[in-house]
Length: 233
Ligand code: APR
Image (cartoon, rainbow, N blue to C red):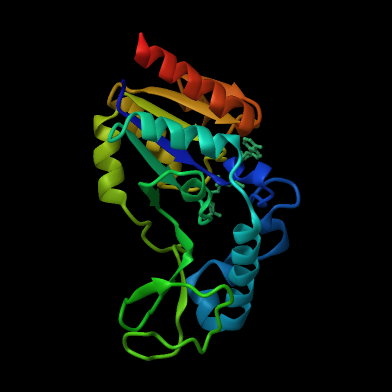
């Protein structure tokens, strides 16, 4: 079995009813990024930012994993330690499908963060700006989401796994946000086979050795079945 790194984006959760960012009607058509996904926006109007993430947290908690999430969880289960799952998504659908090690490089709606002392704790369903930090009791808690201009989480682990992988798969991402959009380059430079599974050609599709277009709930189970059959040969 190859050492696989999988990167998922909003497209894998689209069929679970969660909006993507850049498709028609996407989140960035209805909200200004600088207002709801930047430290400056949070400083300017924290209540607006909390409302944005409270709505996304409510939608995400009502969503159910689809066949793509379930297939990836099976691959991880059947080949423990050989499948690194990195997601740009902040929903918990991979975990709900049974994936245990999920590297949320852009944070998670389930988390709250204290800007004053750095303490992290499980976010309440509806988070208020005056929400005091359980550790230092300062108000001003924020969603534990990586905003534009901030350093993504787990980068050291991700780059180490990319350097050692023989297979890199990107699923449901437009390839427009770095550093995630550059992972295919890292993997390719290390001789890995690179595969894009996406509804349409992403901004980085030409960097992939193989591109399959379609819905994640169709493409991912088919690809996982191929990998499992190959491993059993
Ligand atoms: N199956 C497969 N792919 C799909 C599906 C589907 N059912 N529906 C949409 N897609 C594809 C779209 O074609 C698009 O290429 O998913 C991609 C979603 O792209 P974006 O909306 O840009 O989302 P993503 O790539 O995850 O954004 C990356 O940008 O705003 C930041 O932090 C945010 O994590 C996010 C990052």
